[in-house]
Length: 57
Image (tube, rainbow, N blue to C red; front, side, top):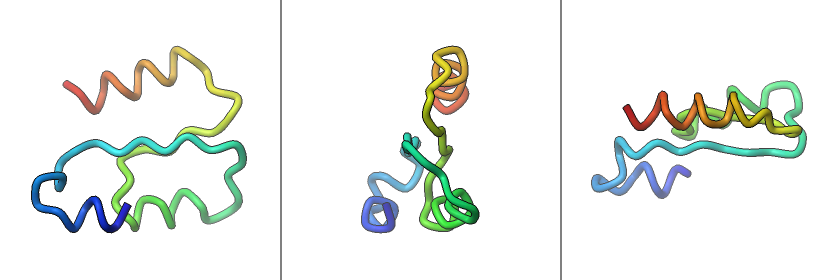
């Protein structure tokens, strides 16, 4: 994620992370690396679509 963000062409590209388990502090670590949003399993499709829409609009 840091490598993607380091490339000027991808500075504003949304990065969504889907994870099976999120431990305490994982979301903060991901956000520090440049992740736009973090979703955990089980994935709620409405939440997933809403998140995608939020970052593409």
